[in-house]
Length: 175
Image 1: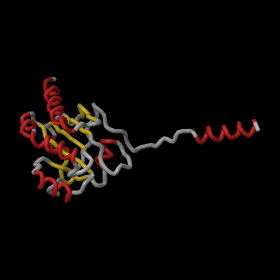
Image 2 (image 1 turned 180 degrees about the horizontal axis):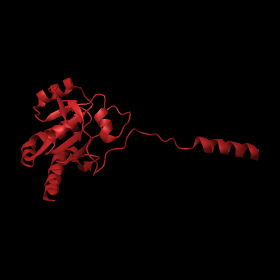
Image 3 (image 1 turned 120 degrees about the vertical axis):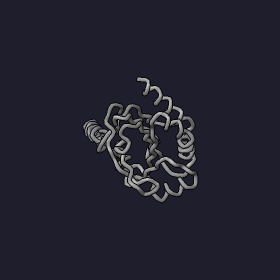
Image 4 (image 1 turned 90 degrees about the horizontal axis):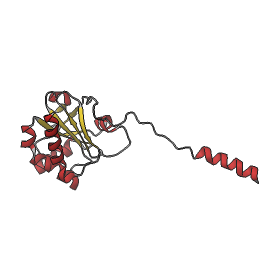
């Protein structure tokens, strides 16, 4: 009986070894060079990060077009666009929705900044770390004019996020 318990304990110990899933990449961190990419916008025109060299870039990822939290976040960015222009910054939104979905949403809610379609989640995986998610995580990367990530918001609260980003931009520009 004791031998049987010992044998079963050994089996359970082997089975209890945690499974570790390896991802293609970890999320990008402050100090990393922001990887270049090209994705179609709501106008179905390719937009590349490299087009914005010399500008600050607010690269924000969001889960789904036309959902309540994403709509609040996008409207706040849209309302603050003149403030972003003043500090030489552009706003780029990225989700795993299609160009058609972005086009419909931007027309309905009159968003003028670029919404980028990443249905194959290539850029989502590049920035957030690869996973099998069906939507992008809600997070933001602030990229300086030299192409370095200077701030990451890994878990965004939508109501005041644009204000937080603008405050960080102001602080970064004082350095």
